[in-house]
Image (cartoon, rainbow, N blue to C red; front, side, top):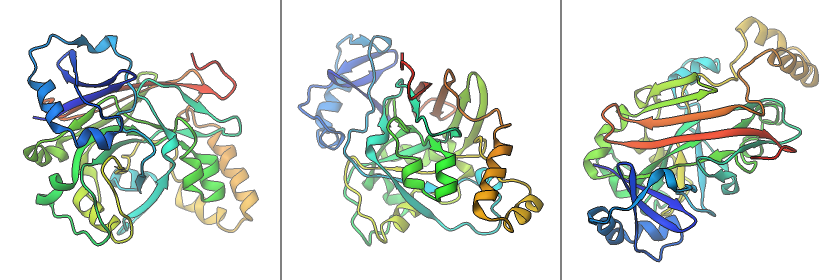
Length: 316
């Protein structure tokens, strides 16, 4: 069964039910923690009563700096929402690790951003180096991936679309809420990955709800394709795409064809005028709730609860 690890300002904790036991380690970074598995095992086996999880203030279990790589359009439901048809090649992009924030931290919408969107994603946390040229088979996944985290790939759509710029639109501070738990997997747990269900709600309204069975390029293949050109190291994270249900959706095909004939400035002005009527974009005062777990709870990445604020608002 997976072991959930939580990080606070005081250090690392192993979660056991509703309580957490401190890990006796000098590790500061995620990579250092993963190298001290003995300390994690000792905390897991400890008879200590521990501390109530609700009394702890969780930080992201993925420490920075690190590499944050993400997959684009990697769920069939998201591909449909985005207007894609036919085969969809694996596509990767980078995010600044400075965008990583905690699972209860406020998501801050920059003052120049109007169309802020959510994307629940499963993050693979590397436990071993992935050199360029590595081929990862399903049976080898546990040799490279140490565990899983819940992430939200928050996106400024008006930056992303007008600039065709993924890096900027997804890299503002607080745009990658991560955690609360780093679920360290046993080898047999990897067979349960497709059972993981991703659920995201805004103000209690369920927006995204799919399992990994909806995924197009699965983790082992994704790592193999990424390793054609990118090295990963312990503590780095790969975000594996989001299912359908985001605020942004492609317009009907006839509208797309007409828009393609317009100058870019006119096209985007018309598009965002129509998007302004879409109530699903994030606004200050909204609260995003997200979970990833198997139905039986064998793998459970915990719950994120992140409020949204404007850049000039008090984040409290």
